[in-house]
Length: 84
Image (cartoon, rainbow, N blue to C red; front, top):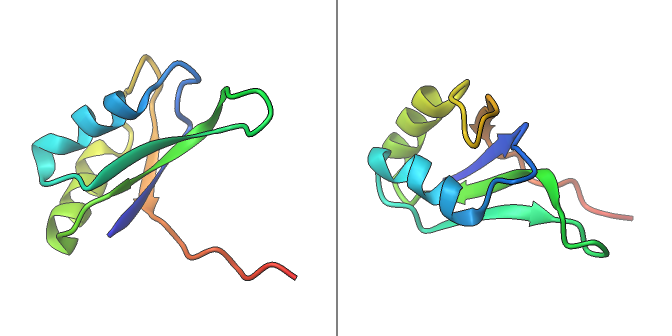
């Protein structure tokens, strides 16, 4: 299950995401998305969890929680629409 984490602090790291989600189940990957040119955070990231049930529980518990002094929005990631 791929989980979208929005409204992230620009100071948040991959490790911050991982440590926030690990209490709710196995985390396969946790990534803060960075700007290609500047290398700075874009304010959102993705977490992958192999178990759907644990992922849903994590979404419910982490949504609204503060990560690095900022309340985050968490939901199941949507597939990207195809580019033209």
